[in-house]
Image 1: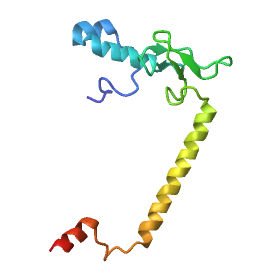
Image 2 (image 1 turned 120 degrees about the horizontal axis):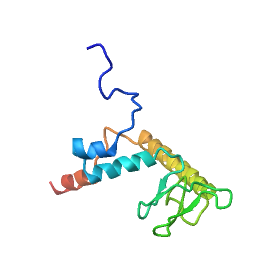
Image 3 (image 1 turned 180 degrees about the horizontal axis):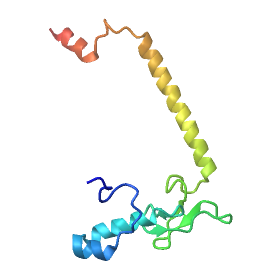
Length: 134
């Protein structure tokens, strides 16, 4: 009763796929997911954003973060996937910063507008139309 429970966190015993299939009755779909999650432990592992084919090439000095899918030929970024096709990571990062800055400025302008607008006497356009017809 005082021992460590079965399946305890920290167990490093590998799971035998044949045992899972035969004894536990795990199907092909679940085993494929298990295989995929095992592959994801590799820091160089990425999936093609178009066909989900695995890629473990990782970035290189020659091609930077650009990866080419061996299955479908899609070129994608190791860090950002298909987020910036045709642009560099630096260009994409700059664009993202500029977009975020513009969003924050818009949010601030909206907040300023509504902070100065009267709240108790505000009447919606639909309410004004109702009042005009009665």
